[in-house]
Length: 435
Image (tube, rainbow, N blue to C red; front, side, top):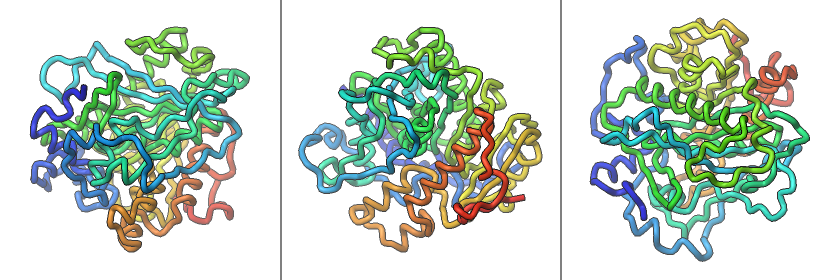
């Protein structure tokens, strides 16, 4: 049974508002400066309300989630394969934080999250490859775009479910991923599975009731119920506490425990693979802003990378002595974003600011490779695609992001210096360094 997904007309309306701030969903806009003194430009292409800008979300009828999920599809989506030397395993976990109530729903319900763990695997034969998104949430995702499972089949990932961890690699550095406003953890899959193929344990996190759709055990679907008027800095604080809780659950796993209340089978070798002394975090858009807020809250996060995300709240005005990467699209940088300038001046550890020319804000999500494949069904012209995703080739955009994220975390968590971070590289002419 699908619980809470369509309990009220308001919940249904909010479910469609991916890419919209709560105020926008309510038909309100504001020029009021944010609490940190910045005046976020709601017309800026990198602002979080644009995280799903080209996708005109439509009302989702419940029948769309249950009818006809079997049978061939007119369009099979494909995603970029990982480039690292290792096969990839994956497991999804349901986590319940009994110390907090969910701020986005009435009552005293504990905060619940769904996460995916991606890791280097061995003996993958017989372990099926995980879908990009589970069936119920995937149907909701497609329906919100005006598409159906008959028209589009979401891709299969490289992650072999419950495949044994490659224990020859010893303890694995950990990376956490936070996605864009009202976006899903699946939007970081192309980057997550690639980092896993390079020897990282990557944890992608769904921020329930901020995300548009999250599927829990028992086919329970939870949708965006964030109240109108929620301030971005408040949202970031919720996300930061989500991340700290997830890190605590990883500690439980590292000690041989199973934090999922359903106690499902965990991959063989997982407990010995979690290196709690090497933790990094990256995020896209509002999830990129959440990296700084999370690092201020939890000092276990040793390095962070923000993928084109504007900052909110007081976190960027506080000193941060750990390594940080700013990674922006072609039209965004600290030259035109006051929140980035403020953070930059407070970064006291290693810092690097790079720009991906030809890319747009959405280029840092799985939309980059997905939407061009769906363009015909979505009614998007080539000119509209370039407006939303820039002029860079989708596969190239993903390849460049993968290379520089890996270079940064290899340097900071593995102490393997990469010349890519020293300055412009002939092999990646799309990248410039903002000095």
